[in-house]
Length: 155
Image 1 (spheres, helix red, strand yellow):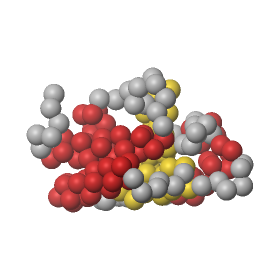
Image 2 (cartoon, helix red, strand yellow):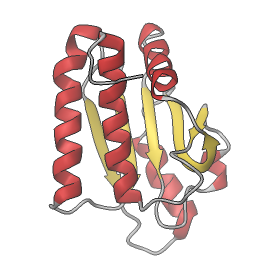
Image 3 (spheres, one colour):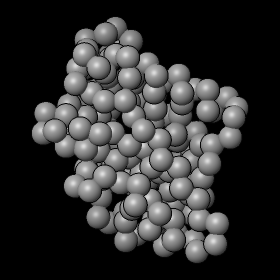
């Protein structure tokens, strides 16, 4: 199993990068005993100005073949943290790779979004894609602690 966050844009050094690194490091340490791999971050950037279609092509190249495709989109399902953890456990138990895709400022091209296995939302509001990375990294770590029975997550 591989876990990938594929995102449009390059994350510069700053508080968001530190938070993402911290949560993904915590996940890597806690997930090892659960059979969860470290998360790889794949950043893509369309330097030619091709818009969402070009971004989708770059994102598609970063997604492992056959991976469960999870797009982050404001129209997606709002899962609880335990529901999200159960999805991750299911992919782990199937030995299936999973790719979480975060689009750019204009979102994710419908051609890629419509082929997703799951679309999730962090609420009906639109979030800056750099903050979505932080929130996703935290939720991956939280899912890991839920699966481990760690008290980090409280009901």
